[in-house]
Length: 473
Image 1 (cartoon, rainbow, N blue to C red):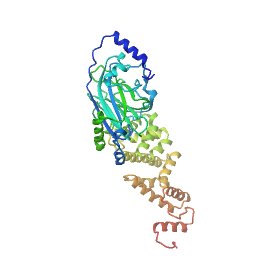
Image 2: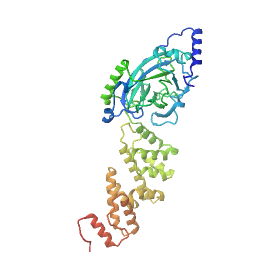
Image 3: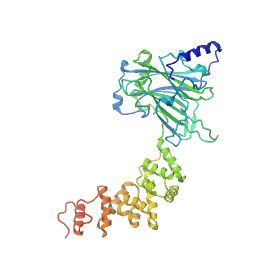
Image 4: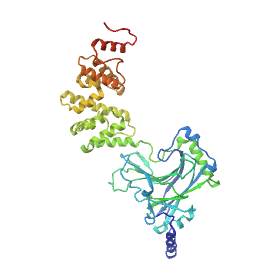
């Protein structure tokens, strides 16, 4: 049920106000609030592209005014309100080392509603069906403007920071609502974000991990939208925050300060912090989590495939898909070596460098298995696909891997080694080398691995010396 069917609720409120004494006002929590504007959507974050900034129009009649009122609640209301999940199009969740969680926890009890018309902040407590759930208090009354292509971000945060284990600095728990106007017509997009420590119990000495949940909710059908999310301020008897969003077509003098703030934010976009948890890339922490997952046999294969995808590794994911559990255990053991890729990768890790180290580890394992004579056919196929004919010979592979510094040098050595095998006496070896080179656009023009020795030599000579005329007698 939406707030639009509010007559029974208002009657209940009137009866309650006649029978119950006026409660003591709810103490104001220690909270900070702010409004920021940036070009871009709530999910993309601020864009610094000049074309986006140049397209912003500040004509008052073309702007959308937004008034956001934050109200703390003594109790979390449940009755007469619809779950937020029923009006949610997308939920993005991040916690610690896991960039995506299967379910939302911070917004599990969040609620959604609409009012038939905009209401002045002083009258909100009389209109909303919130007073019956306990005491309330307005803690922020914020204004913003919405040009086309711009997001207005309204934030309220607990002033008492928590020491987040990943950010390695004190961070604020907060609620944020972002409104984005992709086009002049229609309602703006609305995103609700909660950044908090999950309510699940943890050891007293366990580090706090700030979780972020962002819900892209249905745009309002009318001029006033209400979102209610569980949130507890430090040293305050609050259980939730109601966010009342009122929209106005065109702006008047009361939005002058908000319009000026929008101009300042967009004029200096680099100074506007990205919404959410900035300072590091969550995929890097996902890589660290995948490295730790190598200790679990049941998660090893998926972790290796994920690492290959995230770091650009070429050989490791192919090996992970076909190798048996014993081989995967060998890869994990080598990655535990201090000289191998770090298991406790810091936020500033170089993903490309890690991908190369992972591939080098996989190549080293394949080389050693090949030398030992215990080389399954499926792994031989992986090595052949990645290295050509050179990968079939332990001596060639050893020479190629000696002192490698990166993919570019690795590729040059493979091309040179496979080119030498074009002169091998074995037709099968020549075909394999030629096919590998041709797949990479490195095969000599006019060369046929099954042609006569004279024709093969002429093709190779022309490739090495394009200006040469004639063949080799």
